[in-house]
Image (tube, rainbow, N blue to C red; front, side):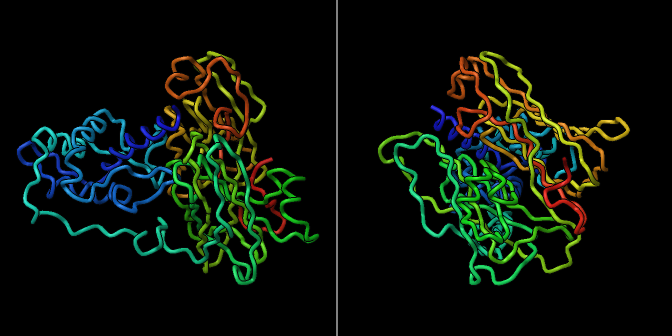
Length: 439
């Protein structure tokens, strides 16, 4: 069943996320020990999730703890096997390399260290060689991965996802009072908490400035659809982290604004499967001067239909920039049939540049790819976003969907999406459009 498969993906992913990019000692089998050589890698790259009360990355929660040798030792062979096969740590972009701040990967020496340790019988070594215990930001920030927010806005009342729910898309609204947010601010970062663990397929956040006609936000949203909920803060799904913007970049949050928590819940229905959920968003205020306003938008196609039993069906969308625009993040979003995604820039002179290539898309770990430095794309650049879908019986058997169906764009997990989210920014100018750099 699908939920069981997603849980298995999380286990496999997180078992081996214990070995991300960190200095390693290759050595030979006789030389490598846990306390001296392996523990530093685990501390720096996996204990943030693999521990009691570890990070919840958009619903992906580590299923085991690696806080001690006794806890790590039973998983040694699984770690070595996946790392040696270059299947882990979880990073699905092949290109470009070295440009993303959250890129994961292992050097040959790091892989050798882990494999040699396992081949030697995973020895503990001398505990006196162990580094000091690792410290984690969220231990002193209330569980927030990028520090303690200046403001946290939680849905006023918890919501119960009933036992009989399979797929549910629903929006909740919270209008900020003077006590919540007394003054207009620029924010430099934000982080979502779904409050629902793996039952949350994804969560999107929006902010809308106070309406001059005082029309209730529920009525505005019903009339205008997604546009009625305001400016997007992006979305998170399994694997997603908090967002922190570069110096000089920010998002305006006005006093009296309305926050929208747009939730997609997905689970196996059944007695006792219901859960309480109370989503929240934490904001980090920018006190320094802001020169660039950031907008999260998507380049997507909502008018497609995937034929039955195809293995490599492409869906594309494009946007041409009507002004110079800085790109900060990419987040390709699709569902079970999606197998690959690619972003390409076509410059005004006709030259092309690969912005992001995800040849093995996994809806069970939807990464936000964060550029180390804002990337300037000149006016007239066209951004092409492509998704490839596999609607074959073989994939259907693995992911639990019907290959004989012809899904199009839709909110259910059994539907599909082809949305290329982009975080971009333009210089602050009263004449600049507030919805991003495209037309």
